[in-house]
Image 1 (tube, one colour):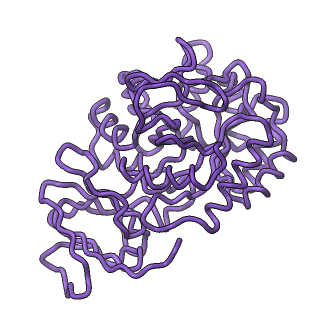
Image 2 (image 1 turned 135 degrees about the vertical axis):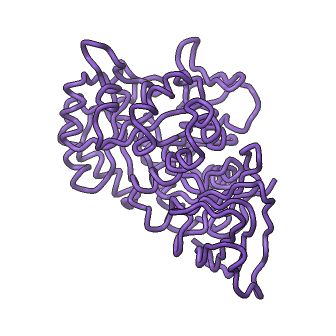
Length: 394
């Protein structure tokens, strides 16, 4: 992050801090970090600080973290350019996302090489404060099952391969933090063991694994489920599948796309009741068409038709989403009747903990990065701060 000197006080509104809710509070920010949080009537000296007054009925929450996002606003991680990542990083604060994992997809190995190298260079030296921070890379594919490819191009699917992964992680300068794979494929358990030993989150999806294979994979190191229900074995009374394993296993974090399209609202509610806000993570899995008009867009060399919130490869195949994090945040409350505090856990705290970043992100607390979102009374994003700098204001 580029250093800068910015002293800011956000005041009034309701602050959803890490361990308390403060009505009419304040957050003092210096050099991109939160240095004080408290009640406004106890605010000490404010000289030298820029004051931002927040309306009383607005909510102040920690910045959202999207661990599964391919693209937005015409750009995609697989474009493998600085410009594409700039567009994503500057667009995402509009929806309340302050950090994210740049997510790759199944393509030929050269294309993956380039995307990983590009993301690594960006993370190491090209990020700027005042836009969403890329906190790592999510490698989705190519180690998946062709019968559950979804919108991932089948011709580029490969069997799990530790040596190839090592090559990619070297290209990525160790920035691959999460890997989605089909653990039942030949080489799957070897790769799982390697990922576990390296402290990389191993996730299961695009997989034909039975319930028993899913449980074995969890024992071998899977600690995450990618986009629950989508491209995996579903819940059946004689084989509970990956979904059943996700419901029953308390050690696994579970992503869900809460757009009401990928998973029906009633199934989101059923899942939430089973998994709870302790283990659920909201993601967008969005493609480049997010924030753009209806039309036809490229995804991994395939043409995707986007119409009225749906992204389709053909009549029956969903191709990622155009979901915005702010809408996932609203939808989960609407679909499940959960509290705003639950929604914060699923969009900020849980992803930060899963990526081992809770020491600096995921909540409003002393010493953490000043990644903060102000929501208006309709729960729409009014303002977003990334590392203490205003990245978006309505």
